[in-house]
Length: 174
Image 1 (spheres, helix red, strand yellow):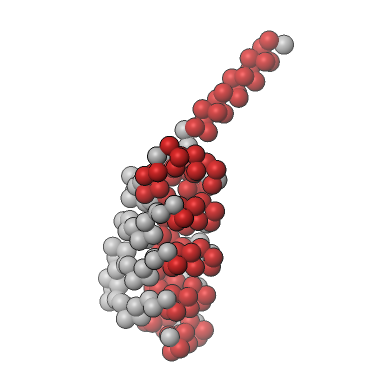
Image 2 (spheres, helix red, strand yellow):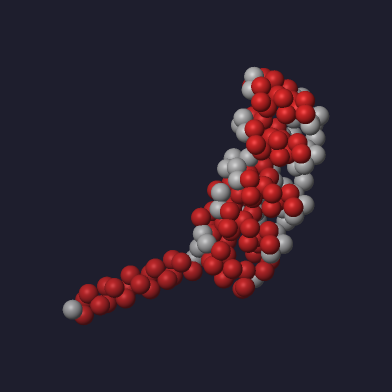
């Protein structure tokens, strides 16, 4: 009986230690607001930390679709325009689109015209991924239709290349 009690105590304490070792980046990817808030209470600067691959917690939360944590980070003042080696939170949102999160980022000043190091803007990503709703929202938010990526192509040229009439027509409207 003592062995069983000791075993369960070890498992319990090991679980507690493991939970405490989750980084801000792990929590941004798939943690909870409660976990993020616990780290934030210890160190408010944690919301703009950068991992070894240059990603911020907000970029990771947007990329993984962790909307609640992303909202928490934005509400606490995370830099919505931080540019990693791969782009901004808006660019990450192009991978895992969420219209409520898009609205939140834009409302808090996310710039739809910040290109990643290859010159690709969120609008170009939206068109390349064939995301009509995101393309429309970015165009409505004054995304630059004439910006060229490193290949010298604009979002409209990618739309034509895709042959997706609904997306092509958005460029005629906006």
